[in-house]
Length: 578
Ligand code: ZN
Ligand code: ZN
Image (cartoon, rainbow, N blue to C red; front, side, top):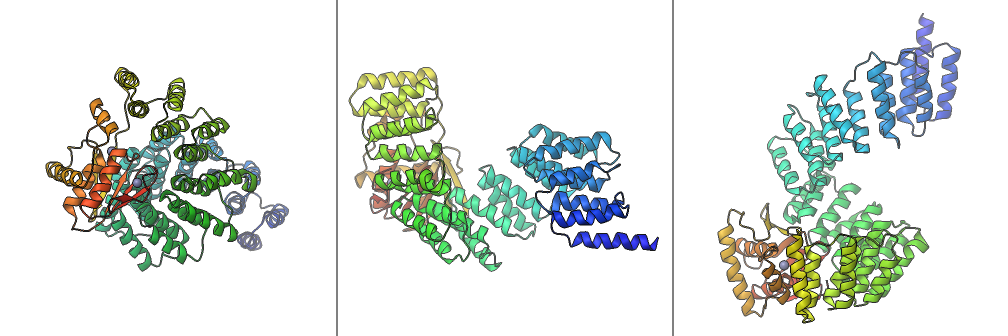
């Protein structure tokens, strides 16, 4: 008997030091020779090793599992866990089902967590809800690990509300739970919620780690909350997280998206370890700020550092070329993608090329680029072209683009307005009337525009024609003063905007005007304003902001859906090319 147990111990020790399948098979031979194949501790260790510790042994794990007469909970958990992290997560759920129907074992913390992991990766909502019900029935709702996995699973399935309900009902939470909820909000595009949650977290005396910081920094980047971002940067340095490459990347992204490109570069420059995300973040940063030349130069440094660019790298590059009007360079890099780096251009890359040609007035080339794209029926491409037609007042190509959008059944009020303004500038009253009729008859909805501005440690949000802000009356009063002073400085409302006004449905007062008025009222003389907007800045607001920057002697930085505008002394960094 002692002989037997010393053998078992020896084998278990061997298994602990095992690091390859080959070695494992030798140990297994030893197990079989000694007739210990069905020893519970040994079989479970063997299986765990194949399923979890070493990648690529899952098939072997499956084989081992099938040889077990009566698999115990540890064995089920190993196989479910192994598959949940593998390229075949659905197998994990099949094993979970099999366990329920064929075994006497009941699921435990680990079973639920791994099964939920599989659901999260497969984005299968029905199964996630079924598991949620099973968790309630088996009394695991008080289990921190299980509930945290449930939050992650709902996040993966895009059900923020459900994740929130689970989170709020938890009697106990650990740091992983808080991080899961912050990341949930940040992924769902609810950065406000993420930042508020952080405030609660602090009140409850919960610490933070690198994961918390990454989630929060990405929320700051989203809303352009530079003040908060700087505070998080300070915390990161204090805790020694600043050398962490993930934090570094998140900081670059935050500073670039909050309009502070020099700080982004400083972080980049100070990083000793850089991965492809690091390079992409900085190249993208320069790209959306309209610094195409710098983006290209960074791209060349990236190649020299031996880093392989990917599709995101090129998106940043092309975006920079397009905003700066570097047609030749843009096209060159677009072709380089496939020919030199074997990166297949996606719809967004084609979009950049259409934009690049279109802005530069090469509309026939833009049209050619659309026909080159494998998915030329994408409305985004045609809409981009239509936008270029507006800049260059080209009725002919504009009508082609609109006809294509109509054929695809994809046109919206914004498109009609675009074409209507093209007609308006071409003095085509009939065209304008046709568009107006079309908008009315179709009752087409537009995406509501909103803007964010950070003042102190609070982020304020305004929508078009907003009356919901608590200081609404004050904001409108300030706005009329601002408009008055901008007009004295030379601001003239844009004619196409007047046209949009006539339509009524699109709103008279765009959200960034409200945000600017609010910012001017609430910040000291000379302070810069940073505004984030979900749509493109319209011509009228662009001109308005230039004159406000001049009249009030303020720097105003606006991040719109596609790029940054730095307004100062009556001019914008985009040189009206956007
Ligand atoms: Zn506007
Ligand atoms: Zn601009």
